[in-house]
Image (cartoon, rainbow, N blue to C red; front, top):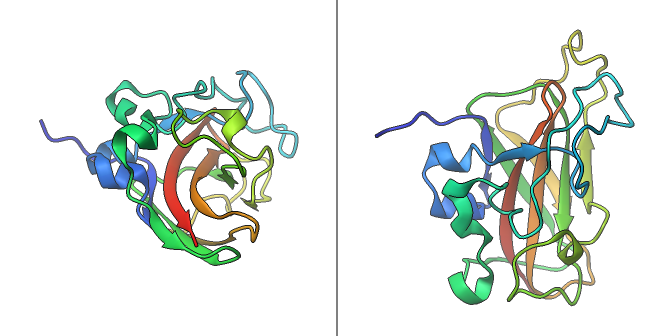
Length: 193
């Protein structure tokens, strides 16, 4: 049965979801916002009028955003041998989001696995550095009357990779929505030379 694509996904460099799922599935990896938070019902400290978050994905289910249809995305590299984009330490990497249904957006956060992470284990919060390596935030408030919160399609961010990471790493890209409790989760596998 054909399904319509929905919401949005990282299309360049291709996310793990873009490489291994149908378009409608890749664009539907949606779970509670505010990663690395684990709890639901939290308000945005920057924009208190935004909708509180729903339940973020559990550790071990981050790549799939907890969606059963995408559970293969949670398998560690030792089992799947994920395609890794060749990049350089310190490189400004262009990340492109495309949308099927744009939402009023508060921010995009980009998290990178920390040095010494275990690629043979499922992705957990402990595998990522606690702070994003890049954040792009929209300032309009309150969300229901702000006209500047709908993202351009496509949205392109220039994310500079840290100079101290080498080898295989995972970049977690999180698109946080202002007018719902959700965010969209995309992982990109990198080989940092």
